[in-house]
Image 1 (spheres, rainbow, N blue to C red):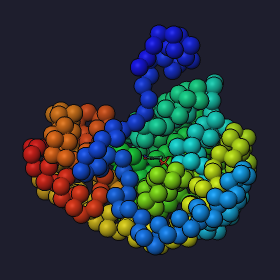
Image 2 (image 1 turned 90 degrees about the vertical axis):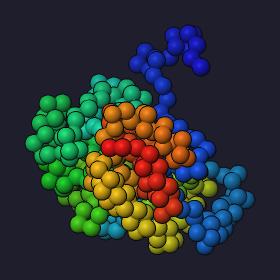
Image 3 (image 1 turned 180 degrees about the vertical axis):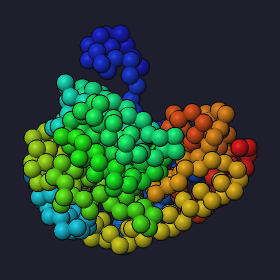
Length: 359
Ligand code: PMP
C-alpha cells in the first residue's frame, strides 16, 4: 500500500519504487532463489543447536562486535593464507555489499556493474544515493577485457562490481577481465562470488588475486553452497585497511551472538555441508544438457542455476511451469527464465514441466 503522504515524505529518489524480492510461494518445487535444496544433515543440526544453546544464557550481553572468532574461521575456510584481519562478516553478502557502498560509494560517486547481473547491486546504489551505471555484458553474457575497460574509463567508478559466477547468467569471469579492470580503475573492485563453490573445474576464485591487488574485494556467502541462507551469513575478503573502513559504517553488534555461533558450528562441519555441492552441480549439468537436447538455448553455468530460453513470452512460460507446481525465476530478461539446480527429484519435476513448453 502506498499512500500519498508517505510518498511525499519519502526521499525523492525512492518515490514510486517497489521493494526487491522474488515471490515466496508455497509450491511443491521451489527453484527460484538459488537456495540449496538440501536440508542440513542431522549431524550439523545437532552441532548448530548445541552452539546456539551455549550462547543463550549470555544473551544479556552484546555479541562480539567484531566477530573475531567467526572471521578467523572464515579465513581458515577461504585458505590462500588469509587471516582474520582480511575477513569481514555480516548478515548475508547483501549487508556486506551494502556496507561497501556506504563506505566507498554514496552521494556524488558512481558505481559500475555489467548487466544482466545481480539485481540487488543497482538497488544498493539507490539505497546509498550512489549513481549507478549499467555497463552491459556481451550478447553471449560474457565480458571482454576491452568492453569492461572502456566502461571503467568512461565512468571512473568509485566502486566496480563484477559478479562471477554471474547471477542470473551463470557465467564466470576470466582473471584477465578482473585484472584489467583493477589496472584501469583507481577505485575499489568487488567480485561477487556468491556461487564460487559451484564453479566448474579450471575456473579459479578471485581470492587467488588478493595478495597482488589491495583494491580488490571478494564477496562470499554461506547462503548457497553451505545451505545456510536462513541464518544470514555473508562475508568478504580484502586488504585489512578495507575491513577497517567498513567498520566505520557497520552498526555496532550487527551480527547476533546466535548467528556468530551458528555460523562457526556450520563452518566446523564445512565438509559435510558442502557434501551436496557435487550432487547439485550434476543436476545443473543435467539441466543444461537436457534443455539443449530439447532445443532450448541455455547459457553455460558455473553456478547452481541455469538461464534458459528463448521464450516468445517468458511470463507465460513462468506461469505454465508454476501451474505444474514448479516455481522458477523471471529475472526480467525478455525471453529468458532462470532455474535453480535442486535435488534430482526437483530437477526431474522441472524437466517434465518443461515438456509442456515448446522452444
Ligand atoms: N550475490 C549474488 C550474486 C546473489 O545471487 C545473492 C543472493 N541471491 C547474494 C549476493 C546475496 O546473498 P546473501 O545476502 O544471502 O548472502
